[in-house]
Every structure is written in C-alpha cells, then in structure tokens.
Amino acid sequence: MEKLFRYLENEYRKKTRKSAALFRRAFRVMVRGGSHSLRLWKPYPFFLNSAAGAEVQDVDGNCYLDYWQGHYSNILGHNPPVIRRALEPYFRHGTFHTGFETLSQVELAERLLASLGRRGLKVRFTTSGTLASTYAVMLAMGYTGRHFILKFGGGWHGASPYLLKGVKFHPGVGFLAPDSAGVPAGLSRQILITRFNDCEHLSDVFKKHGQRLAAFILEPFIGVGGFLFCSREYLELARKLADRYGVVLIFDEIISGFRFCPSGLQKIYGLAPDITLLGKLIGGGQAVAAVVGKEEIMEGCEPSGTAGRRVHFEGGTFSSHEEYMRAGLAMLDYLEKNQRRIYPYLGQQAERLRRGIEKVFRDEGLEAVCTGDGNELVPDSSFFMVNFPRKNIHFRRPEDLWNPERSDVVLREEVLKLALLINGVHVVHGGGSLSTAHTPGDINRTIEAYAEVARIFRRYL
Image 1: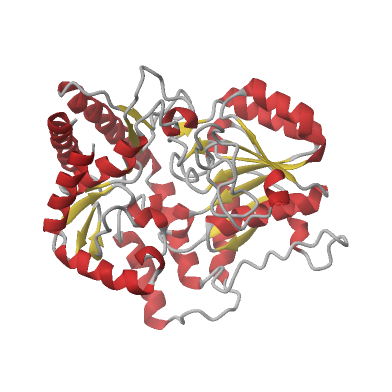
Image 2 (image 1 turned 90 degrees about the vertical axis):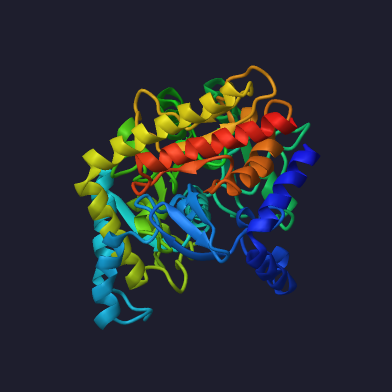
C-alpha cells in the first residue's frame, strides 16, 4: 500500500505544482491549511479556479468531474443558470445583507410546508446543518424537560456538541465513544447510541431509557455512514416508540430533503416526524438550513414561552439573507416543475455508474461494492460509495463500511481519492452524488477513470 501511495502522490504533485505552493502559503496562516477537514486530503488539496456544471478546474488548469458538488448541495451542477437568472435582478437593484425581514423568507417557508404536505408546522431558518441540529435538540429538551438524546451509530448531524458521539468508528468499542474533545463528559454520557436499522435494539433502548429521552434524531438516508436507507419497518417503529414514551422524533433530512423527490423522504415513506431538518438543496447552493417542527414544539422559540423552556434560537446574523432565500426558491421551483425528468434521470445514471464501477474492478480480479442503491420505495438514488470488503460481506450498516476489519477504509478514503484525482475525477468517501449536469458521456468517462484505477491497484496490490 505504501508503494502505491508514493506512486500516486508523485503523479499528483507533478500535476498540481501551483496548488502545492498555495497550500504551503495557507498552511502558514491556517490550521492544517484550511477550514474544513474533508477538503484537506493528503498530500494537499488542489485549489479551485472555476466551476461549472459537472466539472471544476484547479489553478494548474486540471479539470475534474466532481461528484461532491458543494457537499451534495448542487443537484443541478455548479453555478446552474436557473439560480444565476433568479439572482441577477436582485444584484442589479437589490441590497446586500441588511438584517431586516423580507418577503422571500415567507415564500420559502410556505414552499417548505407545502412540500411536506402537513398542517400544524412552523419554520425557522438558520445557515448550517450543524446549527439546525443544535437548535432542534435544544427545542426537544426544552419541550420535554429531558436531557438525553438518542441517535444511531454512524449518523452525522454536523458538529453539534449535543451529537458528537457515535460518528466515528473506534476499534474495540465501535460507535460508542465520544468523537471530540471539548464536549463535557456529562453531556457525552447523555448521548445514547442505537444500531442502524436494528428494530430489536431500538426497542430495548427505548424500554430502558425512554422515560428520560428528549429526542431520537436520525437520518432516514444515512450519509457519511454509507448511503444506506432506513427500512420502513424501522422508521415506523421509531414513530411508534417516540409516541409511546413522549420523545421528540427528529428526521435529519439535510442531505435527503429534495434529493429523491421534491420533498423529504418522509413523504415517500408516509411518516411524520415531530421536527424535520432541511438544508443543502433548499438554499440553491447558498447557506440555508431550516428547522421545521410542530407548532407546540417551535413555541419554545417565543420570548413569552413557558418559564424555563425558552430556547434562544436566533438563527445567526446571516439567517434568511435575501440572496439565500431567492436562490432556494428558484431551486425548489425548478425541482417541482421538472421532477418527472430529474429524479429518474439521476437514478438511472447513478445505477449505471454503480454497476459499471463494480464491473471494472471485477475485471481486474478485485472486489469493489457500491452502496447508494435505491430500494422498493425509493428506486431513483443519485448516490454512490465505493467500498473494498476484506471479507465476503454485505454492506448493510455503518459498521460494515467503517470497521477496518470488514472494509479497507484507507484504500477507499485516501488511496482511491488520489488515484481518481490523477485521472480527472474528484470524489469524497469513494464516491458522491450525481447532478443533472453529469451527462451519459461523463458517466462513461468516470467508469473509465475507475477502470484505470483498478489497473493501477492490480499492479501495486
């Protein structure tokens, strides 16, 4: 593995000399040379020059087919014309950030509620998924008067201190260890972990801890944990147990919202959480996140609320910024009007990509397994993640993807990324998501890039 990585690093350095110089400059003044860990891969990241559609170009002039697409925010590709057209009038005669209320935030809130198709809900905007999940947990604690939170192992809900446990797999203890320093031990003990899609374990946890749980927060489509869908049985049980024990059920749909249909996955599954977290797509590429909850829970934001239950959910300086709201409205309008074309296209092309990747590795005598497939309820999934099993296993849970005894995590996270970069493809966690800007020809190019990577792996491994 070391010899392979040295070869890839040498090839990458030859292509990215300007990026290397910029990284050295950045490293002198910034922690690790940047501000987001996933953007800081080994030996150094390339620095962006431009982005349009499916491609990005670095400062050295290298072009890459991009499957991260703005942390999965750009379902229409980078800098889509539909968003630019919506913002042009605003930039011509509008004002930049003012700090005042505007009509567009009302319209976006109305659009979100209409898409979910439920009554008795209220919206409050903020600027990131981390803030949305933090506020949602605070609202649940204020509403119930309880202070324990349940989540499943492998679930990522941003860097909220209330939820920084059970994200990373730790050898020997799995997903049961805290993930960050700076989180008080008492708070960490209040974060309880259950197993993804394990109905029996979920029932046991509720039976033991249900009376002190404020909330159960989950991703109906788990992102970092492996691009896996919750089963309908699991989500129905979660709803039933939350009702029985008076627990606030939170669906984190930051990634899944509007990605599989012009609404949340909850609408496809026919389930109603108490709070929904939305982000990414609802901002049209801008910094927008939303907490959508039952009125009686969202009343915790009211200054005149019940004593001791007031939650200071102020959203942040740039919450509901006019530009952000207009971009979100343009995105949701476009998805609604073009849903019959967009979602089937993304699903078909992603399926072709997943199967194509598995085949090119198989042709070289190597085993690669793609997660991200749809299911009987959600046939059109635009996600893919490439995994390298150490054993003949099925990737059904986050443990299967992140336990180094079951999956070669280093090969997926570090080596594959660098190998694809020198072949003109950018991925995160071995894959990513498609946008409508990715053409069938782009899919062919991507499969060929993976084929070249498979040939390189065969020579060195």
